Image (tube, rainbow, N blue to C red):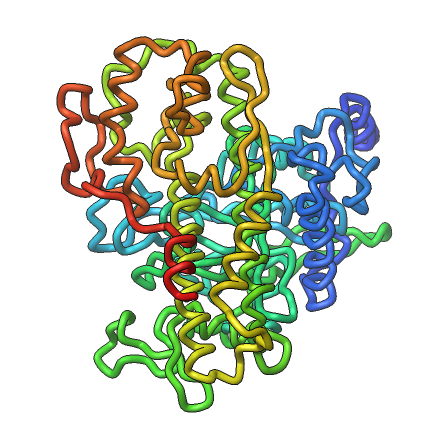
Length: 541
C-alpha cells in the first residue's frame, strides 16, 4: 500500500504539469543584496521599454525582449496587474523565476483611532492583520500560476501600502520606509501616494530626477517623473518611498535537488536594514514637539522644502540645475501623461461607455469607487495632470528667482532666462503632439499647449463624448459629439469638480444633477488655479 501511495505522489507533479500548472520551488532561501540588485535591474529593463513606448501593457512588456525571462511562461499565465498589484506582481514573478521566498500581507485593518471604513483611505493608516507565505512542503509545491493569476491579485490592493513600515516581527509589514538617498531609493523602490496610487521606480538620473512606471485597471503601463503630484501626508499613512522588506526562509530543509521545503518565511528586522529611516516623514531635523509638518530638511546648514531637498539628495554629486533642460524634462513628463491619457480615454470610447445614458448620480467619491467609473473615468489622472502644470509654473518662478539671486547651483549662461524658458516651452509644447479619435471616427490632433489651455475643460466623466473628454469648445470640433442635453448639462455642472486639483477621498460626491449647483464641502472649487506659464514668462522678460 505504501508503494502505491508513493507512486501516486510521484505522479502528481506530472499530472499537474500536463494540465498547465507550474510549481513554485525555493532554491535560494534568502533575498540577499545581490538579489535585490537583480530585481532592480529587472524593473529597470521593463521601465525602459515603457519609456521608449515599445510596450504599453503588463502582458506585452513581460512577453517582450525587455523581460529576461520572456518565453519561459506557460500560456495560462495572465500577466495582469493594476496599480496596486504591479509592485507585488513583479516582485512575485521575479521571486518565482529565481527560486526565492515570497510572502505578502493578506489582510489589513484600520489602526486604532481610525474613523474611515474604507481601508484604502484611512486617516491614521493601517496595520497588518494577516499574512500569506508561499511555502513548498515535502510532498508538494505551490502552484505558481494560481498564485500569480489569483492569490496575489486578490490579497493586495492600495490599502496594503497604507502602512508606515515600523512593524518588523510577527505580522510584519511588506515594506519599510527608506532614507532619502541614491543608495536607498533605486530601481525597485515603491512610491505610495496616499490618494490611492502606487508606482515603482525604474530609473534615477544623475541630476536627481526619479522615474517610475505604474499600471491601471485596463492593464496598461505608463511612465512618469516624480513631482509634487505625489503628496506627503500624516506619517502613519505611509506616503512616499518604501522598499520591499527582504525575506528569508528559516527552518527549511534542503533536498537532494537543492530545493527547500517546510520552515517559515520571516522578514528582515528594521535594525538590520542599512537604509531604514523615518527621515522622509519627519525630516532630518524633526520637530521637538513631534509635528511632522514642522520637521526640517537640512542640507549643509540650510533648510530646504521637501521636494527640493529630495532632488539634492538624489543627485549624483553636487546638484547643478540647467533651467532649460529642467523645463524640457518637466514638459516631457507632461507630454507622456497626455499621450497616456489619450490611450486611456480611447479605451473607454472603444468600450462604448460614452454611448450609455448618464447615471442619475455621481459615485459616492469620484476618486475611489468601482465598476465602469473605476475602469474608464479619469479624475485622479486628471488631477495629477493639473498638479504637473501648476508645478511647471511654480518651478519656473523658482528657477528665475534663484538665478537672479545668484544661486550657484543654477547653471545658465544666456542673457535672458525668462525669454529662453518661454522659447523652450513654446518649442517643446508644439512638438508634443497626439491625436484622439472623435465620435465620428476621425482623428483630432492636439499639442501640449492646446491641452494647457483646455486643462480645466477636460472631462473626467466616462459617459461624456470623447470631444468633451478632451475639452472641446469650438462648434467645429464639437459637431461630431452626440451627447444629449442632459449629458451637456452634466458637463457644465461638473466644472466645479474639474477646477479642483486636490484629490479628496473623505468628501461626499454622489450628487444628482439638480444638486450639483456649485462647489460643495471638499468637492469642487469656484475658480481654477493659475497655469498660465506663457503670461508669467512674458511678464518677466
